[in-house]
Length: 181
Image 1 (cartoon, rainbow, N blue to C red):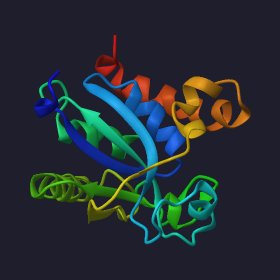
Image 2: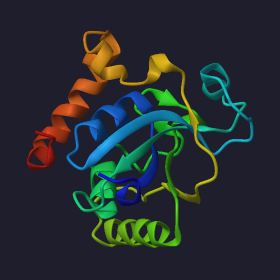
Image 3: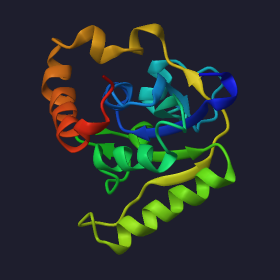
Image 4: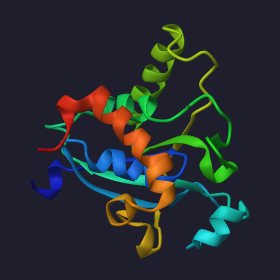
């Protein structure tokens, strides 16, 4: 795949370990990096993000091939694999750093994200209103190296077994036909 065929998507759906694992398994996704976006602190550390003082969200930045997977498909997976109706919370993870957020890279992504949210709301897919923030992408700070490929490298760790494994099972059940071979 040449560089001009790649596109970026940046999503925050709670803990980046969970979202990274899911999108890493999706066909058409070339790379997923865990990191931070949406805050005021330059080059934030994990500790600064977790404390909430930096204002950043834990996010993943996805490099994908739009000939294999459309932005709408990425959003479908995003909304199906986290709770977009809880403000600043995903499960036991609480704070603005765990907010549901889509950082759009261009006007087309913004339009598509808003259309998808409008459709989900109209169809009453969720019992509560969607609170996912849709904001212009500014900066992405890659997280520390031990956060990258966390699930792949720590699958036996209790958090992975208790939290990420069930999300992966749900993802595989819903999107089994879209998994990387």
